[in-house]
Image 1 (cartoon, rainbow, N blue to C red):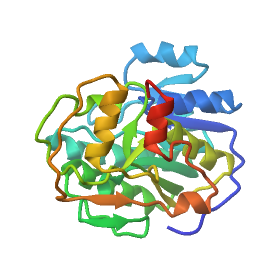
Image 2: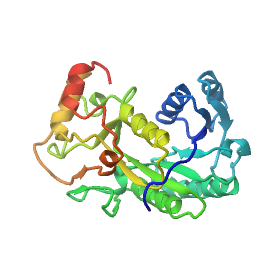
Image 3: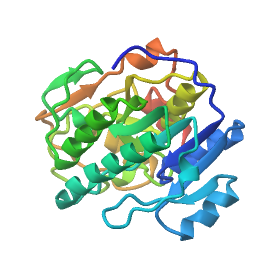
Image 4: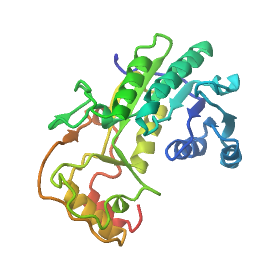
Length: 282
């Protein structure tokens, strides 16, 4: 990928996949005056989108189910926010979806795309990683996401930014629930690599407002406490039984982002201990 490019003269933004992150992003963009089109694969969710002043579209890129309104792709910027399903047998289906999205984006002359990826593309190889680190995923989903990244970032039809989120924390995803009450949990000294929804949205809005594209960004809080310290504090914050970890360091990674400081983005959640003190519910 080359250097950031601008400006894009953004007015209309389409969000493919209005899930936990996508719908919150859409709300924020609407609040900031953008025309926002949002997609879902279920008819039931279209009314919810419309109620949020998000133009609703039924869009599906699954094999043998592909259907969409071309008007959804009439936009200056397309966010692709569809993670692969967890079942290993469906990873090939995920790449098929991305391939079909590429085809639709090129057909309808999309010039700028932001792909919501994951730091799972790095794997745990006992090292600090930055955007300059060559990805080396270990899981099936990490490999599927990297394949999607490669397909999108090398496509000649549009500029593409890759936004790699760390583990997601926020409303409905309080980390105190992840290990509450469990014992003998391995790898207690490994650093956590997490990001709060507030910063997921913050970085995304920053990219839109500054009309930046064609880069890779690791989006992860700069604070990396040990798992045992973080998840015990999280459980206590949620008033749940604290977990017990083994005091050991096995496989790990530490996600560092060099792009966010260069783009003048400051994390709103940059100290998890302070955040727990200030918030009874993430």
